[in-house]
Picture 1: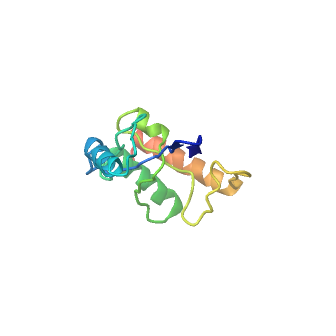
Picture 2: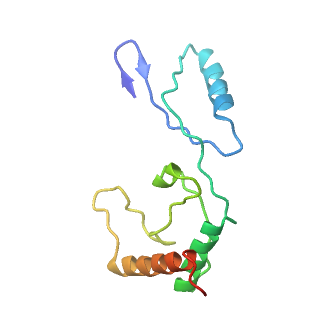
Picture 3: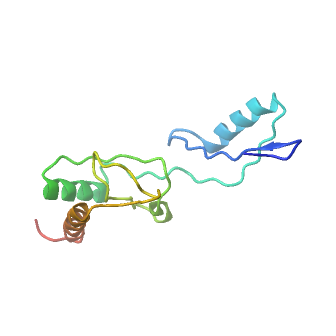
Length: 135
């Protein structure tokens, strides 16, 4: 937020579900804000990125995780943007694990060597299987 003595400026990062329309959502916000004499300016936007859990790639990654760890894997979505939105049918995968404390992009970001080696084994398994290795 910024206040210059007469104007308050705020930048919002709005994440909306696949079922919503950016145009409709922004219109509703602008209408609600206009009653308070607040002007809305859209700077940029990205459509939600989604690859279904039954997609071959997602199934293969979950299988690799399960095969290597012996634990049931599952697909889930995160709120942040990732490199995967740059190409169709791609997803972010690894290397955090259930129960890990998330230090990503924070001071003293860290990751144990044990978890790194496990991630490498999972990735190698996924690459080999998705590239067509016979199981």
